Image (cartoon, rainbow, N blue to C red; front, side):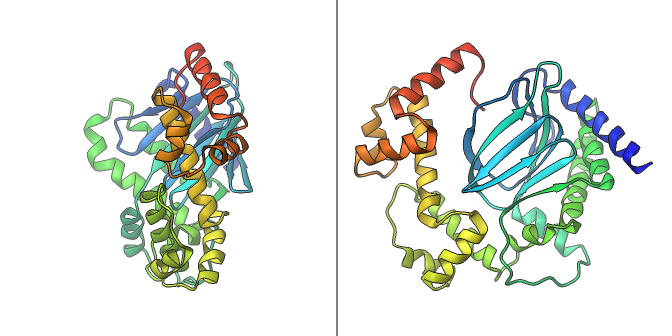
Length: 308
């Protein structure tokens, strides 16, 4: 019986996403922080910074790469990022007859704290560092809350200001109660290793074009350099320098796509001192040298749609 309910919930959610996302891409909605995603073809990897969010798939499959970690998930599964993370994501199963359909809900640390402060969760360890991204299977009660949130898009605009925050809290509560909820909790728990690494991540993101010493980051996190390296990698699957490099290269690609700018100029803008090093690392990350990559991407954009 529970399998049948689960299938019905997924079908209803798929119908709602399909109805409110007629074209491929990422679509904002009347509900703040809620996005609907549709892709009718297998995509190439899209590189971006994944903000704290919950994303559930109801049709198709996707693979997300964080450092060397691969997260593959499909119908009825959800992925959560608990902090800002540079990732690449690729839809690996989709067609015009059965497009990839997903719902994404962004959240803030204060929203998690509000749920925690009004819940009676058992005490959980603060010092155990968890990866800031995880995949899990959605229980029927979680799917039910997601479906009720999506239903508000059906001519219930007057209900959105009151009900959408309540349904969002319920979704976050269900995730926190789930098997990986402690990873989400630690990202907002002052004093936890993840909380301190989150401060370092924010600093790197705001100063990605600048060179820094690891000792400075360690002082910011109130950790030794060895402890910072260990916990940063446990949370993000990469070192602080690798994290910064991904941010720089993603920003460089964005600048090259949005402007008619020379690759060497962009290299200096994002913090590289050597254009040749920039070109090597760009090619290693994106598979093509800067000029060839941008020409290729602009051609695809002209042929199909904007890159999301």
